Image 1: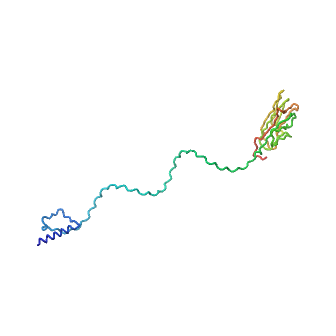
Image 2: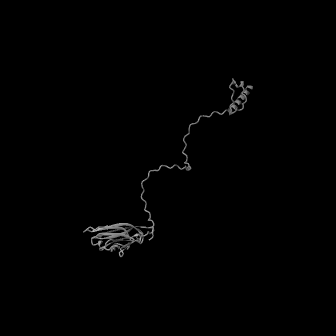
Image 3: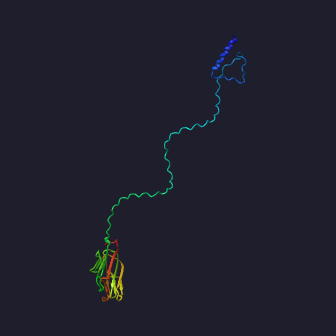
Length: 251
């Protein structure tokens, strides 16, 4: 009877140990039960042991597969201005543009007629009188009427520089002719007559005249020995014109 109770107790104890989640470690040096359960009785379960020391880190795992492409991010902040680059090669010439509109009409200038003064006259017959102005009555040009055919004198109405010239036909005697300005002989021309020939007494000069100055030609010497003439094939002329005015003066 006592032996049957022991077997029952051992069976129940084994069932409890199998259903428990904890294992009771037996000491390594403890002797293993020998024989039947009737000769050995197990002790009560011990308390759970302390947590063990954490183990070492394992090896790194392999790289995972490449993920999918993410969405495009927004624009970043504007960067600093870069340095000026090297100038490029000049391009071809462009097509000419459309002409602009005409400019405004300028102010009316001073009339050039204010500065005009010129004459050109000639003889129509022989002249032999001396010491008085030669009267040239053949008019080639005298639009401003600055040469007076009655007095034989040119009268300046514009201050400035004038050019004068004369070409006189001479025949039968020597001739002395002078160009006067305000009763003063400026130039004198002497022509020595060559027998049986027609000569020329000529001269020219630049003069500065003030408004009101007069210029003329006249013979001097012995009356009977002077002979300036003109015919249908020979002319004797006197001319002059304003070269440039004194624009700073008032006339």
